Length: 246
Image 1 (cartoon, rainbow, N blue to C red):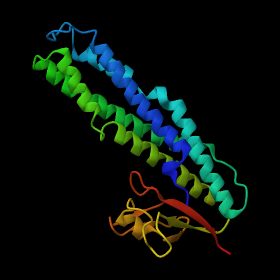
Image 2: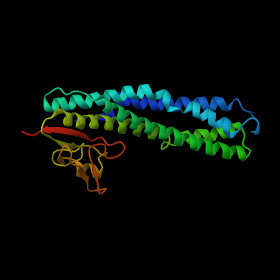
Image 3: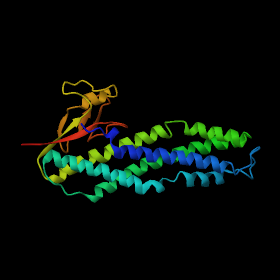
Image 4: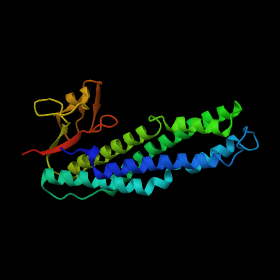
């Protein structure tokens, strides 16, 4: 089974986002040194000035080209996987990559927007309380230390969006092939229904092995929802199998 979590392309995507966050932290701390080192005064520190700094340091547009490269790799692997399943060549759809790229970029932008909002909130709060630069820096480090805002979220984005690109491409390729085929949900579960490690969720066990027509939906009975293909949730490792109907 394909393990997208260990895929070199996915790992590189994760590293890119982690490095971006680390560099933004370093840059913000350096910018803060330009303010007064004693008590923070309005002349030296203002909300408009802070917003400009955060916008520059957390602008996801600088990552767009590299994110597209990683997603292109995942999409290509998805097409190749379906070509192997069906034993045929399939023409790529450039517009599919554009859709995946747009969705993934929005996820990254949401992360940087939420991070900037939290930084602004805590720094202005500290400023209004009369804290000095050293104290404000501790506030910044505390925000960056929240994995739900930074590294943990970045990892989830890289893994989930790569899965979305791979599995989306698999399904798109199957539809474009013109072959009568079905789709099957494959999790890290044995043929007898036993999880292969302790990271397999209850929803994954229920979805594993479900087979549907290409345009039918799978059913997640644990959460009571229908889903077209993996991923079913963040960090989901499931993959699609495309099965030709003989």
